[in-house]
Length: 370
Image 1 (cartoon, rainbow, N blue to C red):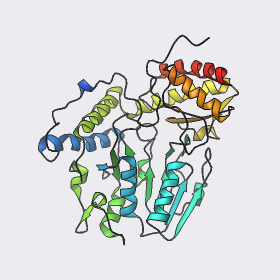
Image 2 (cartoon, rainbow, N blue to C red; image 1 turned 90 degrees about the vertical axis):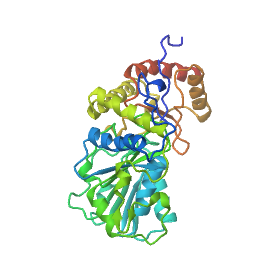
Image 3 (cartoon, rainbow, N blue to C red; image 1 turned 120 degrees about the horizontal axis):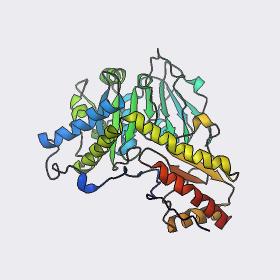
């Protein structure tokens, strides 16, 4: 028999991710629509995106936050194109997006002195290979593998190189050691369930020093230019975006930040994600036909939870189709480059109750197709 209770919210996509509980478009402050983002009425909410992000995340003094184009990808490429090339680079990759940064560094920027440390899906590379005198590029949470970095103990406090971290599925969901990170990128459409196309770029004072003291050898697209006359364009980090943003998306992001504040801050959002992961972990422990793609418990992501099943490809596709047709789980198939399986978003915008209601449906669908 099919379970009687369905999740109230079947949106378990890993990007764009589910909106916050209780979200309604008509609750957004839309006074900026149709107005210039350069006018005071537009610049104020853009600056709030920066200052409220810094406040809620508890960023150290001197860290700058800016809204940039192109989602997390745009923020990461902006950082790499602007900062890399002065020193040798260590790149750590173990899933699709991390391997994309390897491609950018080796085939697009064509840097020399690059050391690549890779691992298969489900595993992590050997971070002890990191050189404190090199720039380091890595993802904090492997969105397509469900494998996260458990800590930053491997990053030297006295490093001379920069750490550039793609943290799009981790910021607002996991504890982040900000002092160990010089560049952090994320997008609104991940953990906070915001809209796409906009990226967030966080720079440490050390990263700013690099920008002001080093000029890359290659041409720099306008969207990537963060300095003028050898000085940081501070306006980028005070709401004066390089290109025209969507003020509707800005209002949506500020709504999400307000929700985080109402919960009590980032700690509460982290706890929600961890409780969601625990629901899936209990289910996996009770069924021998499903397991985490992450090899060890300490590396399991609490946001993009990736699972493998003892089903052939056609049966697995039938299972996800069945769950979608029953309107209990949308978009939970594994990422196209990852091992076949399920990927269930468990970030803080997902209600624990909905995951508890989903688990019996996974068992039911498995029995239907096996």
